[in-house]
Length: 364
Image: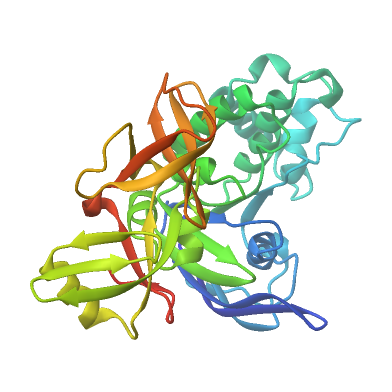
């Protein structure tokens, strides 16, 4: 197995810079997701690692080898595409055996590897079938089997679950994670689905407009987003943001959004002053850290109006108007409210995020 290192990797298509100076180190046996919206450069990055696109600049190492000029077949990687790309006229066995046959692997070795992969994936009973006779989940397993038989140093997976229905996607997420752990193969997984990335990965590289925004573990990415773009992208519903400034009056310190003032302790105020580049700040609060309170305007409560209520089973999303801001709070299941009802909101201060607005970076 091998680690994968990208050093200042860029790729241009004409005047379009699809991947912009990306540097990532993926350790041996890690499962790393490339996460971002459509057009962010994640699939192009994967194709650069695979050798399906040529670099504009930078270096890619797989293990100790510089692979910039190596063809895909010489990189010892295996790629699973979104469409699975199975040969319709071949049986499952022949599809899985194909990469070994073209390398002139002995027949006994081919049979041994295909049988092992089929056993690992639970498709032993399907080896004589054609792809059209398989379900989507079975086709995906066959595509994975075709990758496994090669004993590659690196798996590259390009949104392999996107064609499956929601229930099967949840099941296959767990299966893929289990499979990767049991095989111990370095895996790079492209997805636009943050739930996939958060539940499956050791680390997540978040990309936007060709740039790497942050690479971190799932918990760190959620609790300590590096900037407001990552904070707004990770989490469903996304983080709420309020423009604000820090005000200190004697022994009192507060964040002033012009729609409400939030009192904070002086220690936090000192930390904000020390780390911020200007007086302009952004207060971030996730929906689960906003509590909706009926009646009263006690200390720390913010007046709000219900905009709409969205029951989602295990909880209720409450859309609220706070002056010019439209924000979301996550309330317990069974919460009842009508459009236009007046309520109060509290924000858990120990969970809030403070960003330097000018530098667009997390400071607290």
